[in-house]
Amino acid sequence: MLSYQYLRVMAVVAILFAVSIWRFRSSRRLIWEADPPQTGLHETAITDPQLLAMLQQKQLISAIKRYRQLTGVGLEDAKEAVEGLQRSLSGS
Image (cartoon, one colour):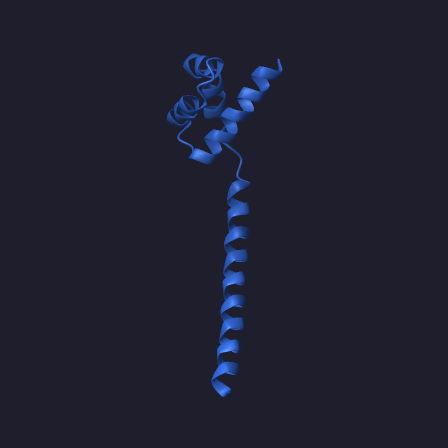
């Protein structure tokens, strides 16, 4: 009987520990994502003729790769930037 109570207490402690670690990691990620992009490299990349041609041909993956080559940013940042550029080009 005592061992079941011990197991329940340990399970609750493990769950609370896992939730606290998950919240800590998610809060750290939000701080990192809030960093502004390097505007000089971004401005150069969005005027690149090869990148713009890829977007006109609907080659999104190739455009993301090209953006990463030009700026050196991560995959998620490049994807967001290229999708934003694509929206702005299709809206005009």
